Amino acid sequence: MIPALTKTEKTKLAGIILGEISPSAVLFIVLSRPQNTKELIALLGPFIPGDTLREKIAYAFTVTRPAFDSDARFREVAEGVLDKLRGVTDDEGEPVEVDGEAPASGITADKLKAVMATPMFVMRDNSVVRRQAAQLKAAGYNAVASLVDLQTGEGQRDYIIRGRMATKLTDGCMTNLDAVIEAGLVPIVIIRNDWAVRTGSGHVPSIGGQPDSQADFYSATRLRYEKDFCEAMAAYFQDIHIQLSIEPEHPASADFALQLARHLRTIGFENRIFVNPYSAAVAAHEKIRSELVALDVEWARSHHGDSVPIDPVWNTDGDTALNGNNIATRVAAMEASGKDWILWTHSLANSRGDFPAEYLDVGLPALGALPTIIGTESGFLWKPVGENSGKLRVLLPEVWTGKVDRGSVELWRGGERIETLASTGVANGNREHFQAKKPGGAYNSGVEVRATEGGRTWAWAIPNPAGRNENLKAERVAR
Image (tube, rainbow, N blue to C red; front, side, top):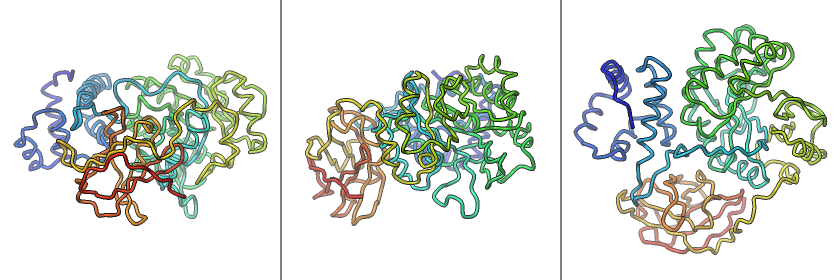
C-alpha cells in the first residue's frame, strides 16, 4: 500500500513532475481518466525516459527522491509503489513482472562461483553480452563481476560504452545488466574504478576524466555523487551484489567505502557488499573492520597462488600466473576450500567475444537434466493480434521456459534484425510470452522470430504474418 503523502511532499512532487513532463501532457493523462495502474503506466510510459519498465522505474525514483525529507521516508513510498506495480496484469490476465522485482529476490544463498569479465556490463554489442551470459550459465557459473566505471580513452577498447555517469547508470549498461540477470546470473557490480584512478590510465566516466590526485577521488563531493548513484540503482537492488571498488590504494578509500556501505544499507540494499583494498588501503580498512562487519561488508582482496586466502571470498584478480592451462586445477582448489570465489585471468577478464573454451569446461556441475532443445518442439505461437493490446504476441514452446535469454527474442527479415520483442512473463501452458510493437500483419513476408538459449540461436520462419501461425519448427542459425 502506498502511504499517504503530506501536503509538502505533494507540492514537491508536482513541481518535479511538471519539470519532467509538459503541462499539456499531464492534462492529456488526467483527461484520459486511467481506470487502473496498467492504464496509468501505459499513459505515462512515453513521457518517462527508458526502454524497459525497470529503466523507467529507476529514472522515476532518481528524479523524485528530492521530494522527501529522509531516505527512510523515500524508501517507504518507493516500496509502496513497487507493491502496487506488482499487481499489474498483461492483456491475457497474467501478472506482469516488474522486471524481476516481484515478489522476491532472484538471488539465492548459493555459494558464489563467479567470473570476472571486466567489460561485460559495458559492452557496446548487447548480443555479445547475451551470448557470454548464456555460455557462463551453461558452464556452471552463477555470477559475473564487471565494472560500470571502466576507463575509456583514445584508442582504448572501442567495443565498450560509458557504463555510468556521476550519479546514474547509462541506458546501455542497464540493458547489459538486464541480459545478465535474465540469463540466470547474479551481477556483481563494481561501482568505482579505483584501479584506473591510481594508475592514471584513461578517463574514468564517473568523474569525466582523471582527478588531480587519488585523494580527490574520495572527496566529500565525490561521496555525495556516489550516494546519489547508489540510490539511482534502487531498481536493481534485489538482483545484484555490489563491490564498492577495485583495488583502492589510498587510505581515504576506507572511510569512503564505510560511508557508501552505510548509505546502501540505509536505503534498503540487503544483498552482499564486497571490498577489495590494496597496499596502504589495507591497514586503513583494518582499522574500521568492526564497523564494516557490522554492515555485513565482506573482504574479497586480490589473492595470488594456490594457498587458501583468509578472506571469505577467494578472488584471483590480477593473478597473471593463472591461465587456460592451470585453470581447472585452480577452480578445483577454490571449490574444495568451501569459499565463495571470483575467478579472474587475463584472457578471461578481457574477452570481447566468446569466452575461451578452457574456461567453459572446468569441472563445475552441469545444469541438470533439462530437456534438450532440438527445434521440433510443439507450442510455438505467432498470435497476430492480442486480445487487449492489439499487437503481435509470440509464445515459445514450454521447453524454452526458464532457458531463453529474454532479451534475445527478436524479429528478423533479410538477414537483418528489425525489432526486439518485450517479455511479458510466463503463462498459458507455462510458456514464455513476448509482445511486438505492431500487429502481426504489419510485418512483411519473410519475417522470422529468433531466440537464443545456452548460446545457441534458433529461428522460426513465419509463412503468414497476418495470420495465426502455430507449432512451427525452428532451425539453428549459424554464427
